[in-house]
Image 1 (tube, rainbow, N blue to C red):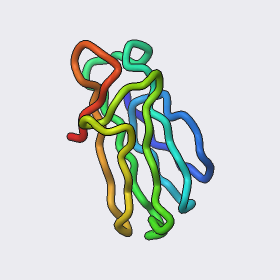
Image 2: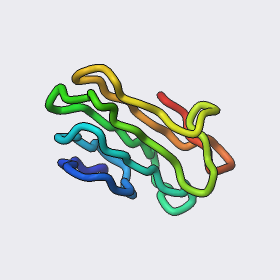
Image 3: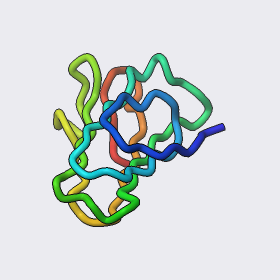
Length: 95
């Protein structure tokens, strides 16, 4: 079962679930997919306080990509992005 967490500092987000970001300008790092397999893994990052300036940055581990880029960015107030692991590798897609 996916959880929900408040985030106030840069960190790796290991478990599937929803991450409610309450501090601007932080970086979150998605895990290596093989370490996080479950029935329907997804990671959602949400700007909870409308403070996406400076941006909230999402990165990967081990040189993976997110839709072909090295990072994804939340730059709009209250925006959220949902990430799913791409099949067969360390890459991610924005769902």
